[in-house]
Length: 171
Image 1 (cartoon, one colour):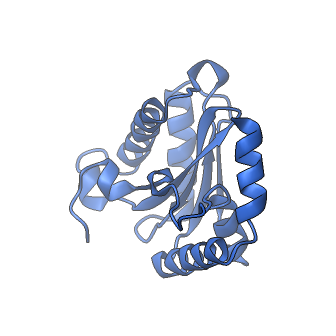
Image 2: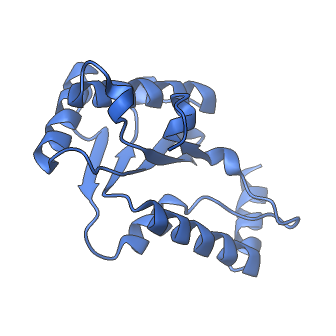
């Protein structure tokens, strides 16, 4: 299975459809205008081959993060994000693009630190960076596993919108 996957990757990586998909996602992310790039790779004992379980853990982490920012009505001041699920060696991890237009930078960073402590994670589990210059590099890194197959389809299940994850109305 792995050899076939690598073979397909080489065929379609430079394909026009894949390039069109990447460009469309970059344009979409520019329009979304994220302020932070977050990588979450769960501790070894919490990693899973099951995407559903991994998304459940991601949801728990992001909910605690938002509750540290606004404990009472976090969902009313929800910080939208777009997550890209990535599978390396069969284990899932995530790259998120967070849009913050509500809180100062210090509050975002301290909120993430509090979240890491609440879950008793080591500091390398969650990496958060402010997007400053050349955001397209971060965008391309986030969508690097999205590939178009020979029929023009791609694995859209790897893209997770926070409004959908938390079942919140779209703004």
